[in-house]
Image 1 (tube, protein in one colour):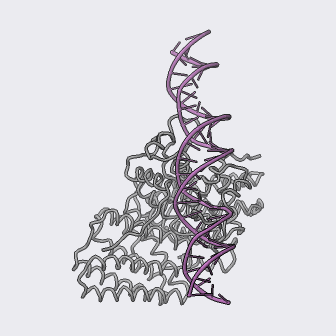
Image 2: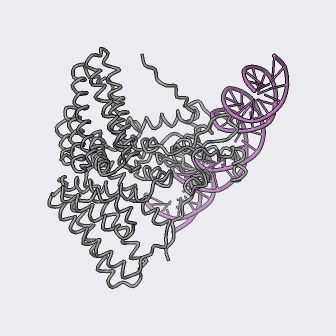
Image 3: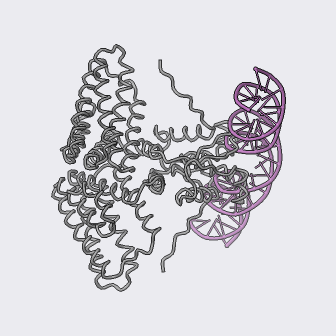
Amino acid sequence: MRFEPVKKMNSYEIIVDQIEAGIREGRLHPGDRLPGERKLMETFSVSRPTVREAMRVLHATGVVNTRAGDPRGAEVLPFTPQALERPLVRMTHQQGTTRSELIQFRLLLEGQASLLAAAADDDEAKRQITARAADLTDLAHRAATAETTADIAEEFGELLSKFHSAIRAASGNQLLQATGQAVDEALTTIARQRLGEETEAPALEARLRCSAEDATTLTERIQAGDAAGARRTATENIYRFYKDRLTDLELQALSPLVG
Amino acid sequence: MRFEPVKKMNSYEIIVDQIEAGIREGRLHPGDRLPGERKLMETFSVSRPTVREAMRVLHATGVVNTRAGDPRGAEVLPFTPQALERPLVRMTHQQGTTRSELIQFRLLLEGQASLLAAAADDDEAKRQITARAADLTDLAHRAATAETTADIAEEFGELLSKFHSAIRAASGNQLLQATGQAVDEALTTIARQRLGEETEAPALEARLRCSAEDATTLTERIQAGDAAGARRTATENIYRFYKDRLTDLELQALSPLVG
DNA sequence: TATACATTACTGGTCTGGCCAGTAATCCGA
DNA sequence: TCGGATTACTGGCCAGACCAGTAATGTATA
C-alpha cells in the first residue's frame, strides 16, 4: 500500500487549483468571465481577501485579467509565452545561470526548430518565413542610405526576432514556439538592461547585411525541405551572430552544437 | 524620441517587482529571510492585505516560502524547475497543445542534452550517468524474479527519469536541465492522470530490459565523447520507447528528429 | 428614430482592525 | 546542562468599509 504525502494547501491555493482545473478540463475558455469576487466568496465559502489572493495569483501568472469596475468579472486569458519568460528570466539571473547558457539554449532550440520547419509541409508557414527574410533584406538596403542608427538598430532586432519566430511557428510545435519566444525575449531583456551596446553605424550595417544573407540561405534550405542542412545552417548563422560578442570560452560551449 | 508605453501597475506588483529585483541583483539570496508582513507594510507604505497579496504571488510562483508563526519571516527559495512546469502543463492542456507535441519536444531536448553531455568533459557527471544506467540494469534483473508488478513499474519510471536527469545535468546547461525536467514531470503528470495504463508483467519486463540496454549503449556513446552518435542514439531510444504507445500519425511527427 | 450624454448600480483596489493557530526563542526548573 | 512550559511574536483568515473606475441603463437632444 502506497500513501500520498500530505500536502497542506492554503485556502487561496484551493481556489486557484479549481479555476485552473476548470480551464484545463475545458469548462472555462479564454474570453470567458469569472463571477465577481463577492460571488466567488459565496461559492467557495471564504472571505473576500482570500478570493482576492487567489485572483492576484491568477492575475500575476497571466491566467486572468482583472479590471476595476468591470461588472462582467475577471476575464480568462489565452496562454502566452510570456508566462514562461518570467521564470526563465528569473532562473537566468539566479544561481549562476549565465547569459552564455541562454545563448547555448537558444542555439539548440533554433537548430531543432529549423530542422522541423524544413521537414514540415506547411506552405503558409513557409511563406511567412520567406516574407520575414525579405523584410530583413529590405531593411539592409534602407540602412545603406539611412542616417539615424538608433531606429535602424531597433527595427533590426525586431525583424530578426520575427524571422526566427516564423521558423519556430513553422516547426509545428507550440512548446518549441513558446520556449524559443521566451528565450528570445529574455535575451533582449538582458540586452536592454545592459544598454549602451549601441553599435556604430558602419558596423551595424555590415552586421545587418550579414544577417540578411544568412536568413536568405536558411530560408532556401527550409523551402527545399533539407532538414539536416537547415539545422546546420541555422546553428552556424547564430554562432556567427554571436562570434564577436562572446569570449572564446563562451564560444567553446556553443561549438558542439554547430555542424 | 521614443516613449515607453504606460504600464499601470497594481500596488502588489510593485512590491513583487522590488523583491524579485532584489533577488536578481544579488541583494537577496536563497535562504535569506524577508521582513515580516507588518514590517513590510511600513517600508512599502501600504496596508497588510496588499503586502499579503504580493507575498501570495511570490509564494505561488515558488520564489518564497511562508510558514505561519515563523518569527523569522518568509524564506527566499532557490529556483526550481517546478516553476517552469506549471506554465508548461497549463500550456499543454490548453489551446490544442497535444501530448505528442510534448513528446516531440522531449525528444528534441534529450537529443541535444546527450550531444552536449558527450561533448562536455565533466567526469563526475558522466560517472553519475553510468551509475543511473547500472541502476536500470539492476532493476531489470530484479524484475525477472519479482512478483508484484506495480512497485516495479513505479520504480522503473523513477529510475528512467533519474537517468535522463543525469544526462541533462551533464550537458552543463541549467536551462536545458530545468526545461527537460519540467517536460519530464509534465509527461508523468499526464500519464498519472490517465492512469490505468498498467502494463502487465511480461510486457513490463521486456520493456524494462529494452530500456536498460538502450541506456547502456547511450552511456557508452557519451563516455566515448561521440557527440553525434550520442544524439542519434538518444533520439532513437526515446522513439523506440514511444513506438507502440502512439499512433502512426503521432510517430510521423517524431521521425524528422531521429537519425 | 438615432445618437450623445448623464445617471446608476455595480465592479475591483485598497485600507482599518481584529481573531486565531502556529512557531521559535526564551526562560525556568530539574 | 538540559528538557519542557512560557511568551511574544508570526502568518492565515475574516468582517466591514470607502473609493475610483467601468458598463449598462435611462434620458434628452438632434
